Length: 185
View 1 (tube, helix red, strand yellow):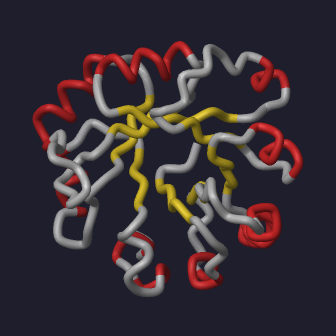
View 2 (cartoon, one colour):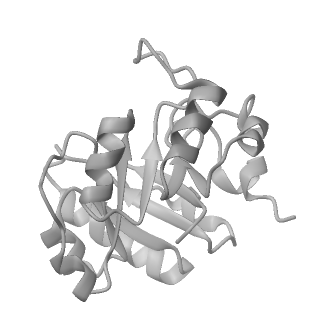
């Protein structure tokens, strides 16, 4: 399972120019008319750069493009994804509270994004460091941070009990390969 995830809604060649192969690409665009065309470009780039591909909320597309897994958003309440284990497809999900975490555990998610970790404009509340750590330690699953992660607070991630993190806006501002996230240690 990758430790860093990038959420994409369209193909962006800059994302694939870094040499870090421990990155998961989550294609999350529900309304695009040319969704399959964009996903084909992203799948080809992921294969070339050896990044793992996850398709959001669409099992058929994930199987068609041979994705490594699927991403189940918090609003998806489907009971189970048991058939995917036989196909070696990883399942990751997102949650905002304890009830949603339990739902994702029931959906057999290998890892769960807990969000929003830090302040974001579109949400009235955010978890913060203490509540995030409480929820991640309370549950025996792989927890990933998501939401509000910026260059200003990326160092605070070391204070969290996480297996990795995901970003949306963080990777859209300037070329991904120049960000501190991609610098090799």
